[in-house]
Length: 491
Image 1 (cartoon, rainbow, N blue to C red):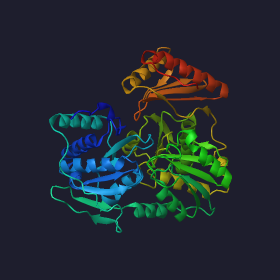
Image 2 (tube, helix red, strand yellow):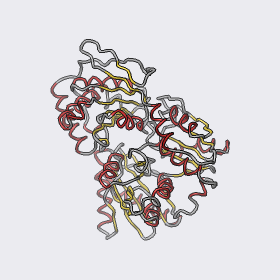
Image 3 (cartoon, one colour):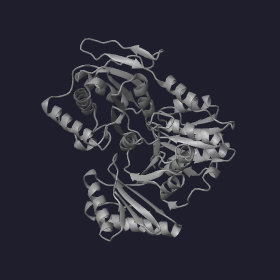
Image 4 (cartoon, helix red, strand yellow):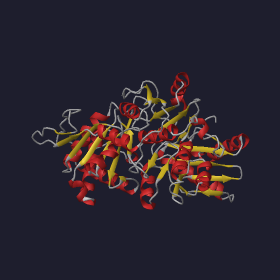
């Protein structure tokens, strides 16, 4: 088959444009390759079947049917959990004891993109395992065209949690599970709020979070004001990416207009959390990490603290002050989950809003659960959210900024930036890109693992230091990206 492109096999998922890169034919090849690989590398897991979930993008239904065909051709049974957020997909693996799984989601990307997160064992696969699937898919593409076993659609939402779909001649047997009620009940049982009743605005960005987050937070005792909580795969109101400030503008306005205690925003598949305080100020991922570590570290002194390279120096400093053992690590949900498992970490987070709780939860990234944990902190205090961070170490920083750069060039650009500063004797943290340390702050340039883009962030001790670091970063990128035609924004 033509059209299978290696660039869709990224560091920790498969992702591409649905019209030219991640077509149903390609999705079937990837699913079949994954199914055969799972049967070879983890036969015990493969015998349990494979979970299949999907987000509400308009392309996800066709990709779901293709994935089920591919898994069927690999000889695997399918457990379909319907349209769910990615955290519910992770939860279902625990609830039903099924380790293998395919979550079809474009996450925070534009509507014309989609992707697949592929599970095995504790987490989702990444790195060399993803590249091995790419090699297998290429071999299959060269051997035959996809097609064959047909998926059976079955009921979208059976009344019972479990049901079995019909199996036509030559078709794939599908067992249907509907885990949402159990997911809500599990979190409501684990997270009990304090005496203060909260008013919360929930902005789901027309993704998958709204129909779960709203009833959950109401069950916890909150007054919830829903904003864009009806699923719509066109995302007509704003892009479901809470890292971009422009996507939080309506949430900021609604929090202020309603006098809410906070606002919670979710990306398309609800594994990233955005937060707005009662004044309408945006709290970034590193602000949230400080709040969560202040709750967790006093109970578990000395625990290792994973600080991903995009985070503020304030996270590192505060974790050390609280008695933790902080160290820098690579960005990426699969990479962080694997590191947490390796060292027994109790919590970790990302600047992008992924939050991983293993102290009272399962250790996977779950923005809906993270929102509940934040509400617990807030409801147990008589202080507003803005006041809870008033004493945090103060630095001046940029948001995470993405600069378009071709996939084939982005890693070379980063390496040139690293060499530029290493050659000058600067301290460079190079576990993921180049975080260059200066006396009054730092700059970071790294290659995105999910998009053809560079990720840039700067932080300074003063506004003047930040301005100088931003200019320094742009100068470094101008030099490093000269041969690629890199277009730099006005920053």
